[in-house]
Length: 173
Image 1 (cartoon, rainbow, N blue to C red):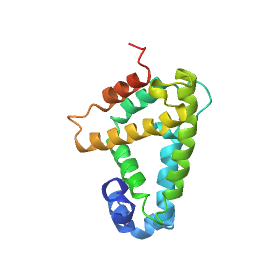
Image 2 (tube, rainbow, N blue to C red; image 1 turned 60 degrees about the vertical axis):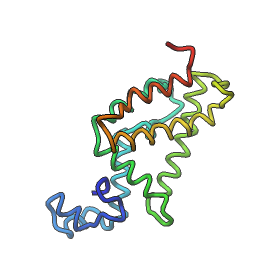
Image 3 (spheres, rainbow, N blue to C red; image 1 turned 90 degrees about the vertical axis):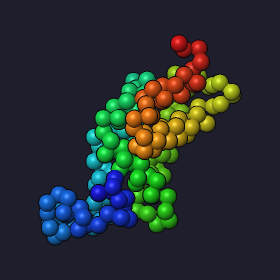
Image 4 (cartoon, helix red, strand yellow; image 1 turned 135 degrees about the horizontal axis):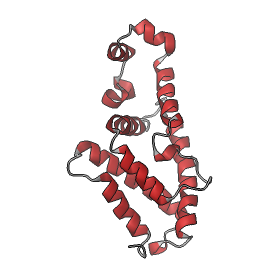
């Protein structure tokens, strides 16, 4: 429901109808719509459903790992759509997911800068630093997701993401 209607457009009644419960049944498990949203976001991260949820600095995460996750996301349209809708909607003042996304992106930018630095060093093409490249990388990912959701037959998200990575590492074939 959040993917289809966003947080503000989804109601407990609509969620209840979708899952085959009464409103009271949904409220038994989630005492408020805010609590339901928090649980949806928690479960998404707990199951490692996208690159932003990955822990950084533990070794093993490379830009190719990130590219593989972008590819994997093409098989999970509903999850990508819910993330895209909720993250965009969270910019509205007072939105209950605003702090979640603010903290999530802040932490993700920091560890992505570490991943970029470990793989490409401190001097990227054009004099860009890893700290500058990290938010640009997420902007490309988010933008590709949105374009793919709107036009999946004409946007090859994994290939375009790998093309962007080639800009960061021009010496790699």
